[in-house]
Image (cartoon, rainbow, N blue to C red):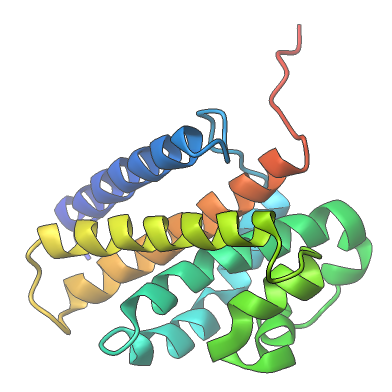
Length: 186
């Protein structure tokens, strides 16, 4: 990939992250800031190839799930980072451990119920599900607006950047819900 393509992908990802952060802030799931930690980023780096292997075949039939599950996974990693990080960072494959509990198709429900601890009928679970639907819709629209040739190398890279952004958004939402905030240090 040349510098021009990398620049394009960086601009796309920054624009998408900004729009998704704005939505999360409007819906009171963030405060305008996208939180990042090296630990949480490292999990995505380790798990992205396997996530992509599961998500790509689902794009045509279930694009919202292929996109939104990355945000759910980000929420799960952030919660585990907060509660059980010493244990989780030793897992050989955190994504597989979460996915394999109920399978890729039910990953959202497993994360909501078992990792985040919300009953499916609770208001918080419904609000999170609504947020994920909105995030996936915006991400899908962003991809389509790029007017990229389907199944091309560029399409793959745009999808990869999109799910990475959704993962980061999910992690940030969960960190915000857990009460984390940036504090200026003198």
